[in-house]
Length: 157
Image (spheres, helix red, strand yellow):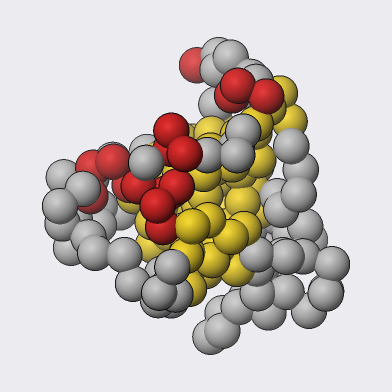
């Protein structure tokens, strides 16, 4: 069973809630063959920030299943094209945005990019120095929560 812990939605900063175990939805999923030790975590997709992702878009209502990125430390090298759930916090961590993005690595920065048919979505740009040393930040912190491994799409009638 994989917990669906919240929504991923570009540009939607919300108060960081306290989790109540009774409020968490669960979905059934199979273990990850490459990283069987990594905890799995799920999110509901809201909005259209990844509706242009290739080869398969992520649409409103889909559920993404990822691997807890902390569990992958030392086993996963950041590289272009990874699809990740990224957390951006501000106000001392009191508000946060969780969103799905595709990673682009440049010489001096990481860009967590939307893949949308809408031009209103912009990448989250983080200088490499800030990403690896958050003490140099600009009042916000950005971290990778999960490496996306699967998309679940329910058919409703």
